[in-house]
Structure formats: C-alpha cells, structure tokens
Length: 309
Image (cartoon, rainbow, N blue to C red):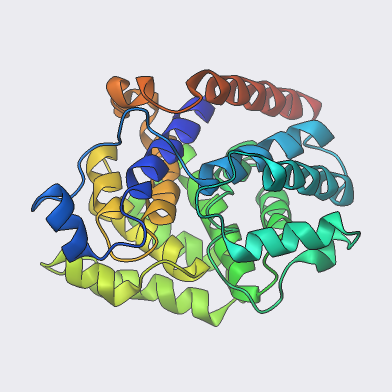
C-alpha cells in the first residue's frame, strides 16, 4: 500500500504550486490574500512534474522492476519521448528535460543524453515512485534514481538530488522519524555532491527560525535540484503531521513552487497515507482514475518483486 497516497500527494501538491510558480511571495499574497493560496483549483491540473513522474513509473513497469538497468532506462526514456510529444505537455516543461529527451530520441544512449552542466530540479521532481518501488533495496534505489536523472540531467548535483528525493520517500514509507531524515539523507548521499550537502545543511541552519519566509529564502528558490529537495524537506520537517499545511507552505514560496510542493507532497503522502489528503482535493485531481490505476500497478509490481527475492 502507499502508492496512491504518494501519487495523489505529489500531484495535488504540484497542482497547488502550479498556480504560484514564477510568482514572488508578495505577488502570491496580492492574488490570494495574506495567507496565500490555500487549495488547488477545480479541476486540479498538475504540471510536467507529475506527468514525468507517471511516465517514469510506467517505464519501470514496462521493463519490469528487476530488469537490467539498460532495459529499465530505455523503457523510461521511451515513456519520456511519449510525454515530450503529448498535446498535454504544455505546462511550462523544463528546457533541460526537453533537450535530454530529444537527444535520446535522436539516437543517443540514455547514459549520454542528459545535459552534463544542468542541475535543474527536473530529475528530482519525478522520482517519488522509485522511492516506493525500490524501498527494500537501498543500492538499487540509488542506482535507478541516479540513472533516471542521467537521461536528462547529468550534473553530479542533479544526480544527488534525484537520489535524495527518492530516498526521502523511502524513509517516510518505512516510518523513520522525521527528525532522522536529514542525518540519514546526508549519509545516503555522502560523496555525491558538496552542493547538495550544503543545501541540506541550510535546512538545519534555519529549521527553527521564527520566520518561515526568511528560512525559505535562506535555502533558495528551488530551480536547481539541491534547493528543491532542501526546500521540500524544510516544509516536511516544519509540518511532519499535516499534509495540507506542508504543501501550502511549499506552494506559497518564491521560485519553483510546483516542484517544491510536488516533492514535499510525495514525501508526506508516503508518511501519512491517503486519508491525510483531503477527499475533496482527491476528487478534483486531474485524471484521478488514471493515477489510481498506475498506483495499483505499482503496488502489484512491488509485491511480485518482493516474492521473487
């Protein structure tokens, strides 16, 4: 269980942040009032963040979770190609994601297709399902998450951010106390990226500040992978038992609000389960039945993988 909570958690966080992406916090408050945006619209349309999350999950399921890495990543990349050409891919998709997928489509290996100098958050925003599917095998989780980033983003910090985002979902699923997240995350990604480490340490610096807005600004704006994961982690640690408060905090921020809320929403779904997400929000989620179908397939594949080990 848990796959539905993760998918709805991230999709609805994404939909909430979609309305505030590219806006400063003062602009958000002028539009939505002093408290900022409070709930997703009806229908709750999500962005490329959720679209790519679903494409990645389907690629893994197409290949089979135990498939060799090359087969897995070719299947994922092919799903990304389908996403690139979808008429619904019109929600400010990331340039690096589009470039990397186009390079794969033109014949480059998935290992070489990613942009080596890009550490944007486009590969970290989409890996929550890896944290779910490979939660029982840390080394496989690390391998698959890093490889999934390399299709579009090959910068070492982007790889670390993707691994870190997936691992946080695993920690939440396994019931690890939130006050352990930061230590275990840094341990798991040790040696991958000094920039990623520095961003996570900034969360520790400001976690108990009186002003959440000042703390968010201290961490960054989330356009790059390390900041998006760090900002999501901050929101989770501030509101570890309240899905709604967490994604509201993430969406009401300067910068890449949808990606921050998407990452945070997936972690919170994993931690708290489906009932923590308002039923009214779930009912208005775009392609609700499709999300449920993918989640059921994920749960089945994960059970079968466990039995085969």
